[in-house]
Image 1 (cartoon, rainbow, N blue to C red):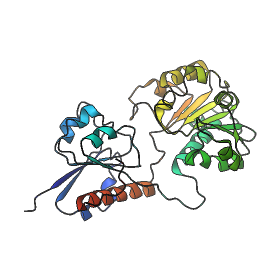
Image 2 (image 1 turned 180 degrees about the vertical axis):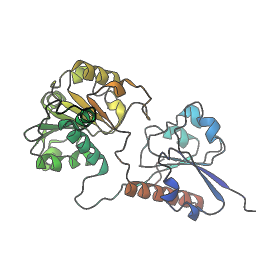
Image 3 (image 1 turned 90 degrees about the horizontal axis):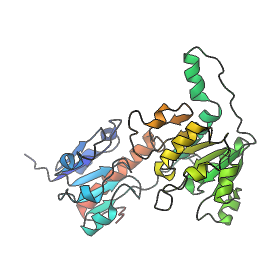
Image 4 (image 1 turned 30 degrees about the vertical axis):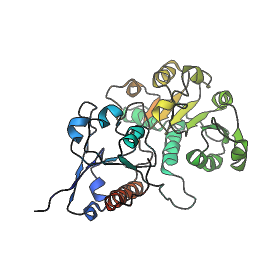
Length: 325
């Protein structure tokens, strides 16, 4: 009988497909891999994960803070998809000699639009053409309940002009939109090379017909757009967030949508994920909600989990790959 030497927990396998997206068997019979398909509540984390040597995290789905990690003494390796994870206390793991590894960027078709930007455009088009509202109305026997708006001639405001923000520019031009951008460290040269007008934060809010957020979550971007900022937007404007929920103050956004401060929102990310049942956002008709699908596609998942297996194998051989800490 072969003894299991390493126990691996793969968390948040919502679609129950992680086992098919990588060659887990290549790790050998001494490695036992267990897949967790449902989100694990904070109170259950320690009980469910005790005894595992390796944790595999789908980036920022499950929060693993110090108060949890210090109660998992068997832990030797954490692998997260992506090369950062704001929900993981990497400093604690570094202090206690636990290796953290990640996965590299996903390659796409040359000239293509990255998945998160595709989702942002899906939300923008659904909002501008009232896709969800009119679909629901039609099923209820109602016909043309409101007026869509055209993207041609409208202004797309980008909060963030990194890889994903930049990927929004070419489709916007194809739709005939003007594009403006702001971030705390945006260089005018970067904006100019993309043919985008760099503006101040207030100008971004005041001029955008569609405000799309493409920033990394950090201490300085958390609650970056609160009640005061939303009040600067046009009452006809829509906000799209495919980045991270806490960048927009959730309570302020709910109030802005209820009061008509802004017209609508399209969201793929939230303060708490999965979004709890009966959350205030689920009661509003002027918001489209997606369950954090920005990076969810079969090619992306195969790439991520394939590199996860590589990371575990490399760590076992003493030559770790893609170390974060």
